Image (cartoon, rainbow, N blue to C red):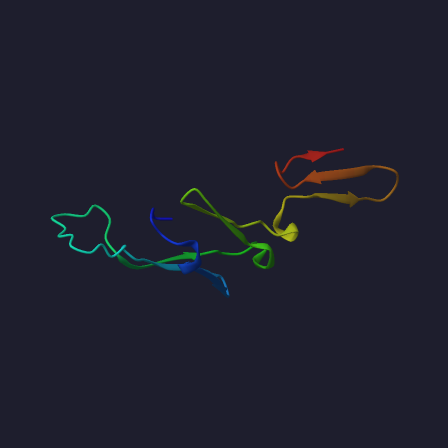
Length: 105
């Protein structure tokens, strides 16, 4: 997040697979001050991120600490790699590891 932004002015929402972060930076009003230049401008901002498939949308979280906004986007359990056991006839059992696609007997 940009420095100088009040965390209360930040809005984060998810609509389908689209994560939107919006906020506004306001500048302090100083009496009898004429600014020649400013490095940080006031105004609103908007950032959007397409989340794609396999995201656990219900458990997205955000924290704000020392001027840094952190958004945690977890992967859903269904999208994580897993082992699939393949049973054959007889006593031989073959396992397929989804992560490395190797067959082990």
